[in-house]
Length: 149
Image: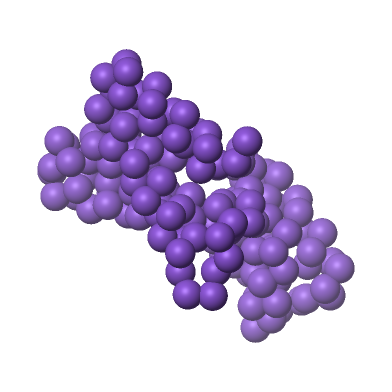
C-alpha cells in the first residue's frame, strides 16, 4: 500500500473516531503529497524518496512554527503545531540518534580524506545522501562542524 493510500485510510479512521487534531495533520500531508504529484515535470506516482522529502519538509515547518509560537508565548498555537508534528513523524522513517550519526559521519570523513573545516561541504553533501530521511540536515551540519573542528 502506498503512502497516499495509507493516509486516506487513516483519514477515514480519524473521521470516524472524530479525532480533529489527527485529521488536520493527515489532510495537510495528503495535500502536500498531491501537490508534489501534480508539480510540473512530476509523474503521476511519486517515489518513496520524494514522499519522505515532502514529509520532512512538513515536519520542519511544524518545528519552526512551534519554536516561533513558543518564543511568543502562544501556547495554544504551539500545541497545535506539536500535535501535527507528532502525526507527521508517524509516517517518517525512524530518526537516528546523535551517536549513530557521528559514527556514520566519522566513516565518511575517513573515506573522503577530509582534514579541514574548509572541506566541510563535501562531507555534508555525502552525509545528506547517506542519511536521507534518517537525520535532519541541521543535525548533520552540527555533527560535521563538531568533528572537523
